[in-house]
Amino acid sequence: MSEPTTNVIEARGLAKTFHVPKNKDGKDRLRALDGIDLTLGRGETLGLVGESGCGKSTLARLLLMLERPDEGTLRFDGVDPFTLKGKELLAWRRRVQMVFQDPFASLNPRMTAADIIAEPWRTHRDVVPSRQDRRKRVLELLDLVGLRAGDAGRYPQEFSGGQRQRIGIARALALDPEVIVCDEPVSALDLSVQAQVLNLLDELQRELKVSYVFISHDLSVVRHVADRVAVMYLGRIVETGTAEEVFEAPRHPYTAALLSAAPELDVSGARRERILLEGEVPSPLDPPSGCRFRTRCWKAEDTCATTVPESQAGAAHQAACHFPLEPAVSG
Image 1 (tube, rainbow, N blue to C red):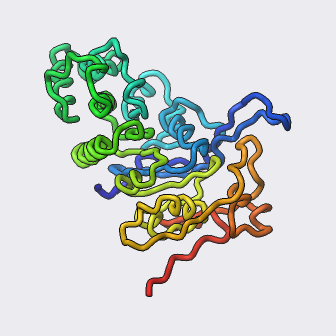
Image 2: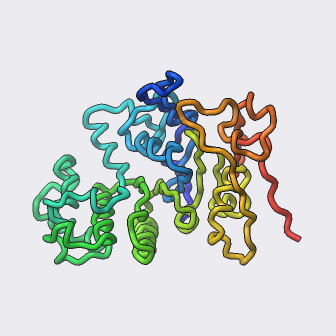
Image 3: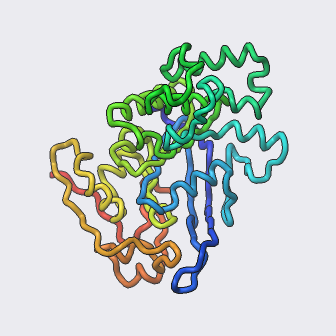
């Protein structure tokens, strides 16, 4: 994949709290995101990984402006999209699109493939103004994602899961976006079909220079597609770095534990030592003080309970940990 030259998205200190029914301790505020710093380069794929409930999808909703942050700033090419209104806001929404997890639920069964792909133009009328041009563009998009012109008049239930996801990708491309958020885009597909869809996304990126935020719990998929990786735990990013850095030499204990649970990732033949975490994932309604991972971490000390660990400013490979793991020294 191409190396980015500039950042298309920059997030600083993003936080989001939801009001939920009170738990047994009377707490009703769930801090889904807490101080997220993130960048996305132009033409880059950023993999976002972590256990269920860590805040990945909430972060995606903020990037898509489906939710407004309570704190922090989000810049898209230097502009805060939450300050835009009217035509400026409508124009901005073309630039960030989404590919959904479930190719069966995300397509309207009463619409043909052509209608689904063309639906964004009903709102953004000036993108493809004439009916003739729309028909031509639909066929171009079908071809771009590996489908035939004859598929335009077929309904979603007439396609396989992989073909449906290709239609979803074509719909996301209809407005010529600069960023596509992919939320578990292959998790509902068979393994062989997953590879086909991932290769398609890679080809589209090289051709169109689009950036991806790729959300997944499948580490093998993330390693295959991502240029950089951000690891999340209980609403915070605990480690960021290139895919090679994070997968080959994790600095945060949580990242190491995740990787140790997926030994098939190690292509060198050497087995990674299995790390068994003790205890349950804490409730996001009542996260631990200091380092949120400390209650499950074998390296935790007293300072971990009192001080929130910070990432190393300016470092390419960062871990928010008081006692980061040292890279293994090869013999």
